[in-house]
Image 1 (cartoon, rainbow, N blue to C red):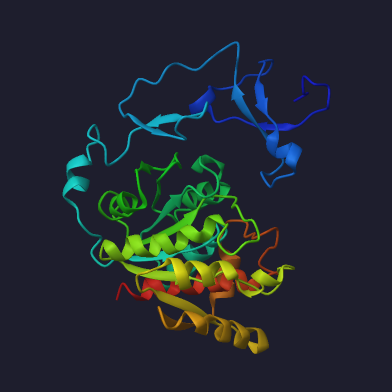
Image 2: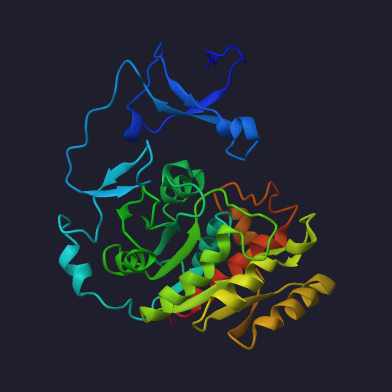
Length: 334
Protein backbone atom coordinates (compact mmCIF):
# COMPACT_ATOMS: atom_id res chain seq x y z
CA UNK A 1 0.00 0.00 0.00
CA UNK A 2 1.47 3.36 -1.04
CA UNK A 3 1.02 6.27 1.36
CA UNK A 4 -0.68 9.37 -0.02
CA UNK A 5 2.02 11.50 1.55
CA UNK A 6 4.53 9.95 -0.82
CA UNK A 7 6.54 8.47 2.03
CA UNK A 8 6.54 4.99 0.51
CA UNK A 9 4.58 1.84 1.25
CA UNK A 10 3.49 0.13 4.45
CA UNK A 11 1.41 -2.78 5.59
CA UNK A 12 -1.99 -1.79 6.96
CA UNK A 13 -4.33 -3.80 9.11
CA UNK A 14 -8.12 -3.46 8.82
CA UNK A 15 -10.72 -4.84 11.18
CA UNK A 16 -13.69 -5.54 8.84
CA UNK A 17 -16.16 -5.51 11.73
CA UNK A 18 -15.23 -1.87 12.34
CA UNK A 19 -14.41 -0.41 8.91
CA UNK A 20 -15.83 -2.82 6.36
CA UNK A 21 -13.96 -5.14 4.00
CA UNK A 22 -11.28 -3.33 1.94
CA UNK A 23 -10.97 -4.33 -1.70
CA UNK A 24 -8.12 -3.74 -4.18
CA UNK A 25 -8.25 -0.16 -5.41
CA UNK A 26 -10.07 1.24 -2.36
CA UNK A 27 -8.94 4.51 -0.86
CA UNK A 28 -8.23 4.08 2.83
CA UNK A 29 -7.62 6.46 5.70
CA UNK A 30 -4.70 5.23 7.79
CA UNK A 31 -3.43 5.82 11.28
CA UNK A 32 0.39 5.53 11.09
CA UNK A 33 1.16 6.68 14.63
CA UNK A 34 2.65 3.37 15.71
CA UNK A 35 4.94 3.28 12.68
CA UNK A 36 6.09 6.85 13.25
CA UNK A 37 6.91 6.09 16.89
CA UNK A 38 8.48 2.71 16.16
CA UNK A 39 6.06 0.90 18.46
CA UNK A 40 5.77 -2.86 18.48
CA UNK A 41 2.57 -3.34 16.51
CA UNK A 42 4.11 -5.80 14.10
CA UNK A 43 4.97 -3.05 11.62
CA UNK A 44 1.37 -2.17 10.74
CA UNK A 45 -0.57 0.95 10.07
CA UNK A 46 -4.27 0.74 10.89
CA UNK A 47 -7.19 1.38 8.56
CA UNK A 48 -9.52 3.95 10.12
CA UNK A 49 -12.06 4.15 7.31
CA UNK A 50 -12.88 3.42 3.68
CA UNK A 51 -14.02 6.94 2.78
CA UNK A 52 -15.77 5.89 -0.42
CA UNK A 53 -17.56 2.84 1.04
CA UNK A 54 -18.51 3.10 4.67
CA UNK A 55 -19.74 0.04 6.62
CA UNK A 56 -23.44 -0.26 7.51
CA UNK A 57 -24.65 1.24 10.76
CA UNK A 58 -24.77 -1.19 13.68
CA UNK A 59 -28.22 -2.72 14.07
CA UNK A 60 -27.77 -4.67 17.29
CA UNK A 61 -28.67 -6.51 19.31
CA UNK A 62 -26.44 -5.05 21.96
CA UNK A 63 -25.75 -1.57 23.22
CA UNK A 64 -22.48 -2.12 25.05
CA UNK A 65 -19.98 0.39 23.64
CA UNK A 66 -16.26 -0.32 23.89
CA UNK A 67 -13.33 1.94 23.04
CA UNK A 68 -15.89 4.48 24.22
CA UNK A 69 -15.91 8.07 22.98
CA UNK A 70 -13.18 7.43 20.43
CA UNK A 71 -13.72 7.57 16.66
CA UNK A 72 -13.39 3.77 16.56
CA UNK A 73 -15.89 2.92 19.31
CA UNK A 74 -17.54 -0.45 18.74
CA UNK A 75 -21.02 -1.57 19.76
CA UNK A 76 -21.19 -5.17 20.97
CA UNK A 77 -23.62 -7.44 22.76
CA UNK A 78 -22.41 -7.87 26.32
CA UNK A 79 -23.20 -11.14 28.06
CA UNK A 80 -24.19 -9.15 31.13
CA UNK A 81 -26.50 -6.62 29.45
CA UNK A 82 -30.29 -6.84 29.32
CA UNK A 83 -30.52 -7.88 25.65
CA UNK A 84 -28.32 -10.92 26.19
CA UNK A 85 -29.64 -14.44 26.60
CA UNK A 86 -27.15 -14.75 29.46
CA UNK A 87 -28.33 -11.68 31.37
CA UNK A 88 -30.46 -13.55 33.91
CA UNK A 89 -27.70 -16.09 34.50
CA UNK A 90 -25.09 -13.41 35.18
CA UNK A 91 -27.52 -11.26 37.13
CA UNK A 92 -28.04 -14.08 39.61
CA UNK A 93 -24.49 -15.50 39.60
CA UNK A 94 -22.45 -14.51 42.63
CA UNK A 95 -19.34 -16.63 42.34
CA UNK A 96 -17.20 -18.92 40.21
CA UNK A 97 -17.30 -21.97 42.47
CA UNK A 98 -13.61 -22.23 43.29
CA UNK A 99 -12.44 -22.02 39.68
CA UNK A 100 -8.66 -21.59 39.41
CA UNK A 101 -7.84 -18.19 37.88
CA UNK A 102 -4.30 -17.78 36.58
CA UNK A 103 -3.19 -14.16 36.44
CA UNK A 104 -0.29 -13.15 34.20
CA UNK A 105 1.40 -9.86 33.35
CA UNK A 106 2.06 -10.30 29.62
CA UNK A 107 -0.01 -11.68 26.75
CA UNK A 108 2.96 -13.85 25.81
CA UNK A 109 2.34 -15.91 28.96
CA UNK A 110 -1.03 -17.14 27.66
CA UNK A 111 0.11 -20.02 25.41
CA UNK A 112 2.60 -21.16 28.05
CA UNK A 113 -0.07 -21.24 30.78
CA UNK A 114 -2.37 -23.17 28.45
CA UNK A 115 0.43 -25.61 27.58
CA UNK A 116 1.20 -26.26 31.23
CA UNK A 117 -2.46 -26.75 32.13
CA UNK A 118 -3.20 -29.13 29.28
CA UNK A 119 0.02 -31.10 29.78
CA UNK A 120 -1.28 -31.85 33.28
CA UNK A 121 -4.99 -32.14 32.43
CA UNK A 122 -5.61 -32.59 28.68
CA UNK A 123 -9.40 -32.41 29.01
CA UNK A 124 -9.48 -29.10 30.93
CA UNK A 125 -11.49 -26.25 29.39
CA UNK A 126 -9.25 -23.18 29.51
CA UNK A 127 -10.81 -19.78 28.82
CA UNK A 128 -8.91 -16.54 28.27
CA UNK A 129 -10.18 -13.35 29.91
CA UNK A 130 -8.52 -10.43 28.11
CA UNK A 131 -7.95 -7.17 29.96
CA UNK A 132 -7.69 -3.80 28.22
CA UNK A 133 -4.12 -2.90 29.18
CA UNK A 134 -2.71 -3.82 25.77
CA UNK A 135 -4.47 -4.16 22.42
CA UNK A 136 -8.19 -3.48 22.65
CA UNK A 137 -9.33 -5.71 19.74
CA UNK A 138 -8.75 -9.37 20.53
CA UNK A 139 -8.59 -9.82 16.75
CA UNK A 140 -5.02 -8.52 16.84
CA UNK A 141 -3.87 -11.64 18.71
CA UNK A 142 -2.56 -14.35 16.43
CA UNK A 143 -1.90 -16.36 19.58
CA UNK A 144 -5.57 -16.58 20.49
CA UNK A 145 -6.60 -17.42 16.92
CA UNK A 146 -4.04 -20.21 16.69
CA UNK A 147 -4.86 -21.64 20.13
CA UNK A 148 -8.55 -21.70 19.19
CA UNK A 149 -7.82 -23.30 15.82
CA UNK A 150 -5.78 -26.02 17.52
CA UNK A 151 -8.55 -26.70 20.02
CA UNK A 152 -6.37 -25.72 22.98
CA UNK A 153 -8.42 -22.73 24.11
CA UNK A 154 -12.12 -23.22 24.83
CA UNK A 155 -13.03 -19.57 24.37
CA UNK A 156 -12.31 -15.96 25.19
CA UNK A 157 -13.95 -13.10 27.08
CA UNK A 158 -13.04 -9.45 26.49
CA UNK A 159 -13.61 -7.07 29.40
CA UNK A 160 -13.32 -3.37 30.09
CA UNK A 161 -12.63 -1.48 26.87
CA UNK A 162 -11.34 -4.63 25.13
CA UNK A 163 -13.60 -6.26 22.55
CA UNK A 164 -13.76 -9.05 20.00
CA UNK A 165 -13.92 -12.09 22.27
CA UNK A 166 -16.38 -14.93 22.01
CA UNK A 167 -18.15 -13.25 24.92
CA UNK A 168 -18.13 -9.57 25.85
CA UNK A 169 -18.37 -8.32 29.45
CA UNK A 170 -18.22 -5.00 31.25
CA UNK A 171 -15.73 -5.79 34.03
CA UNK A 172 -13.21 -8.45 34.93
CA UNK A 173 -15.74 -9.63 37.51
CA UNK A 174 -18.50 -10.31 34.99
CA UNK A 175 -15.84 -11.60 32.62
CA UNK A 176 -14.86 -14.28 35.13
CA UNK A 177 -18.50 -15.08 35.78
CA UNK A 178 -19.05 -15.42 32.03
CA UNK A 179 -15.98 -17.63 31.65
CA UNK A 180 -17.34 -19.98 34.29
CA UNK A 181 -21.08 -19.95 33.67
CA UNK A 182 -21.38 -19.15 29.95
CA UNK A 183 -18.26 -20.85 28.54
CA UNK A 184 -18.06 -23.61 31.20
CA UNK A 185 -14.41 -22.92 31.98
CA UNK A 186 -12.47 -25.19 34.29
CA UNK A 187 -9.59 -22.69 34.37
CA UNK A 188 -9.52 -19.01 33.45
CA UNK A 189 -6.37 -17.16 32.39
CA UNK A 190 -6.48 -13.40 32.92
CA UNK A 191 -3.94 -11.23 31.08
CA UNK A 192 -3.79 -8.12 28.94
CA UNK A 193 -3.90 -8.31 25.18
CA UNK A 194 -0.86 -8.06 22.90
CA UNK A 195 1.34 -5.12 23.76
CA UNK A 196 1.78 -3.53 27.15
CA UNK A 197 2.55 -0.09 28.47
CA UNK A 198 5.44 0.58 30.81
CA UNK A 199 7.25 3.72 31.89
CA UNK A 200 10.16 2.32 33.87
CA UNK A 201 8.53 3.54 37.09
CA UNK A 202 7.35 1.34 39.98
CA UNK A 203 3.64 1.97 39.37
CA UNK A 204 3.38 3.11 35.74
CA UNK A 205 2.80 -0.12 33.87
CA UNK A 206 -0.33 -1.79 32.55
CA UNK A 207 0.51 -5.09 34.23
CA UNK A 208 -0.51 -3.59 37.58
CA UNK A 209 -3.95 -4.94 36.65
CA UNK A 210 -2.69 -8.42 37.57
CA UNK A 211 -3.06 -7.53 41.23
CA UNK A 212 -6.57 -6.24 40.65
CA UNK A 213 -7.45 -9.49 38.86
CA UNK A 214 -6.33 -11.44 41.93
CA UNK A 215 -8.74 -9.37 44.01
CA UNK A 216 -11.61 -9.96 41.58
CA UNK A 217 -11.03 -13.72 41.51
CA UNK A 218 -10.99 -13.89 45.30
CA UNK A 219 -14.13 -11.76 45.70
CA UNK A 220 -15.94 -14.20 43.42
CA UNK A 221 -14.80 -17.22 45.47
CA UNK A 222 -12.31 -18.30 42.86
CA UNK A 223 -8.79 -19.53 43.56
CA UNK A 224 -6.23 -16.98 42.29
CA UNK A 225 -3.00 -18.45 40.92
CA UNK A 226 -0.24 -15.91 40.36
CA UNK A 227 2.12 -16.53 37.45
CA UNK A 228 5.43 -14.75 37.97
CA UNK A 229 7.00 -12.70 35.22
CA UNK A 230 10.50 -14.15 35.06
CA UNK A 231 13.37 -13.62 32.65
CA UNK A 232 16.94 -14.81 32.42
CA UNK A 233 17.69 -12.85 29.25
CA UNK A 234 16.02 -9.43 29.55
CA UNK A 235 18.72 -6.75 29.24
CA UNK A 236 16.86 -4.54 31.73
CA UNK A 237 17.91 -5.32 35.31
CA UNK A 238 14.45 -4.56 36.69
CA UNK A 239 12.99 -7.45 34.68
CA UNK A 240 15.79 -10.00 35.13
CA UNK A 241 15.01 -12.72 37.63
CA UNK A 242 11.57 -11.95 39.06
CA UNK A 243 10.34 -8.78 37.36
CA UNK A 244 9.55 -5.75 39.49
CA UNK A 245 6.14 -5.87 37.80
CA UNK A 246 5.32 -9.10 39.63
CA UNK A 247 6.71 -7.81 42.91
CA UNK A 248 4.56 -4.67 42.71
CA UNK A 249 1.36 -6.25 41.38
CA UNK A 250 1.33 -9.19 43.76
CA UNK A 251 3.17 -7.62 46.65
CA UNK A 252 1.27 -4.32 46.85
CA UNK A 253 -1.78 -4.21 44.58
CA UNK A 254 -3.23 -7.65 45.30
CA UNK A 255 -5.01 -7.38 48.64
CA UNK A 256 -6.43 -10.91 48.50
CA UNK A 257 -4.30 -13.98 49.05
CA UNK A 258 -3.17 -15.94 46.00
CA UNK A 259 -1.14 -19.04 45.38
CA UNK A 260 1.96 -17.59 43.69
CA UNK A 261 3.73 -20.26 41.67
CA UNK A 262 7.50 -20.35 41.97
CA UNK A 263 9.00 -22.51 39.21
CA UNK A 264 11.74 -24.89 40.33
CA UNK A 265 14.31 -23.82 37.76
CA UNK A 266 17.82 -25.25 37.76
CA UNK A 267 21.09 -23.77 38.93
CA UNK A 268 21.99 -20.36 40.24
CA UNK A 269 19.24 -18.67 38.28
CA UNK A 270 16.63 -20.95 39.81
CA UNK A 271 17.96 -20.15 43.28
CA UNK A 272 17.78 -16.46 42.46
CA UNK A 273 14.14 -16.73 41.39
CA UNK A 274 13.20 -18.53 44.59
CA UNK A 275 15.04 -15.97 46.71
CA UNK A 276 13.45 -12.99 44.93
CA UNK A 277 9.98 -14.53 45.10
CA UNK A 278 10.32 -14.96 48.86
CA UNK A 279 9.40 -11.30 49.41
CA UNK A 280 5.85 -12.20 48.36
CA UNK A 281 5.53 -14.89 51.01
CA UNK A 282 4.09 -12.63 53.69
CA UNK A 283 1.04 -11.74 51.60
CA UNK A 284 0.63 -14.88 49.50
CA UNK A 285 1.15 -18.63 49.61
CA UNK A 286 4.28 -19.52 47.66
CA UNK A 287 3.93 -22.81 45.82
CA UNK A 288 7.01 -24.42 44.33
CA UNK A 289 6.21 -26.33 41.15
CA UNK A 290 8.62 -28.55 39.26
CA UNK A 291 9.09 -27.86 35.56
CA UNK A 292 10.02 -31.38 34.46
CA UNK A 293 8.48 -32.11 31.07
CA UNK A 294 7.22 -28.58 30.53
CA UNK A 295 9.89 -27.60 28.02
CA UNK A 296 8.73 -30.40 25.74
CA UNK A 297 5.11 -29.30 26.22
CA UNK A 298 6.07 -25.77 25.25
CA UNK A 299 7.93 -26.97 22.16
CA UNK A 300 4.80 -28.82 21.08
CA UNK A 301 2.49 -25.80 21.24
CA UNK A 302 1.44 -24.83 17.67
CA UNK A 303 1.95 -21.16 18.47
CA UNK A 304 5.04 -19.00 18.11
CA UNK A 305 6.31 -18.34 21.63
CA UNK A 306 7.75 -14.87 21.96
CA UNK A 307 8.20 -12.46 24.84
CA UNK A 308 9.80 -9.09 24.20
CA UNK A 309 11.16 -10.53 20.95
CA UNK A 310 12.75 -13.57 22.62
CA UNK A 311 11.65 -17.12 21.93
CA UNK A 312 11.72 -20.30 24.00
CA UNK A 313 15.38 -20.98 23.24
CA UNK A 314 16.48 -17.44 24.17
CA UNK A 315 14.49 -17.10 27.40
CA UNK A 316 13.14 -20.47 28.55
CA UNK A 317 12.55 -19.30 32.12
CA UNK A 318 9.90 -16.82 31.01
CA UNK A 319 7.76 -19.55 29.49
CA UNK A 320 8.53 -22.24 32.07
CA UNK A 321 7.33 -19.94 34.87
CA UNK A 322 4.00 -19.39 33.11
CA UNK A 323 3.66 -23.08 32.24
CA UNK A 324 4.29 -24.01 35.88
CA UNK A 325 1.36 -21.79 36.89
CA UNK A 326 -0.84 -23.58 34.35
CA UNK A 327 0.31 -26.96 35.67
CA UNK A 328 -0.54 -25.95 39.24
CA UNK A 329 -3.98 -24.63 38.25
CA UNK A 330 -4.77 -27.94 36.52
CA UNK A 331 -3.76 -29.84 39.64
CA UNK A 332 -6.28 -27.83 41.61
CA UNK A 333 -9.05 -29.50 39.63
CA UNK A 334 -8.41 -32.73 41.50
